[in-house]
Length: 228
Image (cartoon, rainbow, N blue to C red; front, side, top):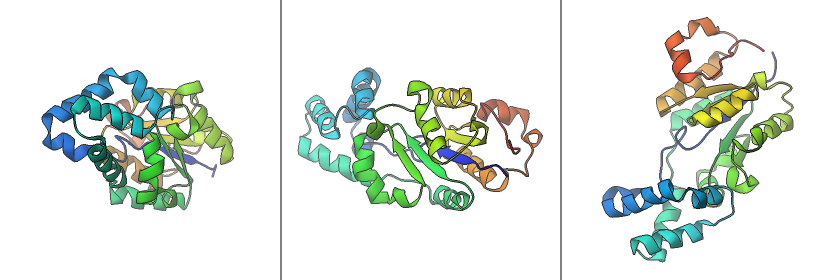
């Protein structure tokens, strides 16, 4: 059997937790300020995701916009980062998959993910490698998917036809597919769990034609469950 590698996204794929989550749920005005920030300040958000800006700087901006003290927002922010929710069933499936294949968490994220989330949730123990855009300085889709190719090389994967990505972003799935990889598009946790189960038990036993055309059209940018 050819060696495989599994990539999986964080936000929208494994977790739906949000920065300042509880405050956004209880304060509609604050929620609008934060939502507008992510929608209309895309350059700042991308620079944050590339590690060019710190979470302290972003916290200061949100404080100025909302009138809520930096100290209060920062404490809430850190707590939210440290208490992000990830489904235990997903973690169990990932650990079982790791017995056979390396599983790489690849996330377009911020410095706070590495500083607060990873150590608090002990994520380094749950994945073979974690690649955060804020640490490497570029996004998953930058440089034609360089982060995926670098990981494949690091784990001695000879062909991207043996690489799988579980991801909620269409753009990232398309980038991965152009590399020759198998991109599995998801839109909720249940779809993520379904793909993890298939990767665990179906790498050579579930032929593509057993997956319904409707499912392939909806979820699969490219499918290849048979041994490449």
